[in-house]
Amino acid sequence: MKETADFAHFQALDLRIGRIEAVEEAETRKPLYRVTVDLGPEIGTRTSIAGYANYPKEGLIGRQVVCVVNFAPKKMGPETSELFILGAVGPEGEGIFITPEREAPLGSIVI
Figure 1 (cartoon, helix red, strand yellow):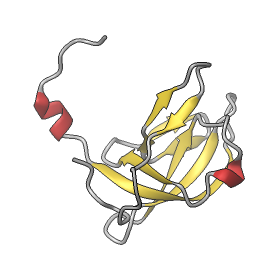
Figure 2 (cartoon, one colour; figure 1 turned 90 degrees about the vertical axis):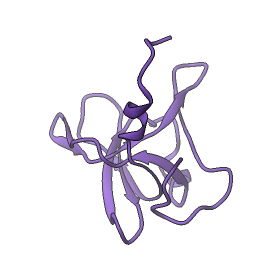
Figure 3 (cartoon, rainbow, N blue to C red; figure 1 turned 135 degrees about the vertical axis):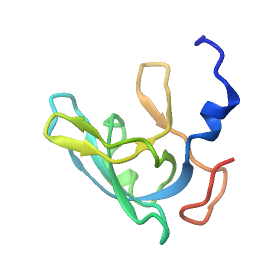
């Protein structure tokens, strides 16, 4: 377990609901995807370089995900990740997307 964080750290995160629109192989050494996510009219579309290569690409299109939209862009080899898609680590170290229980409007704030 990590050390205790102040609640203000959580409040600083802008967590939103997005929908995966496209998935491509990223140009990185590790098997990562370049995931295009629609975050609604206020934020628009952004790209994440994500380690969810255990999912078939076609099965990700249309899936809603929870994203951190206010991290600074992160360079990952020749790619740049503009948002962070939240996930859990599965029993074999694989990534498991965190998704809303039911359909939510794109760009919805996660509280």
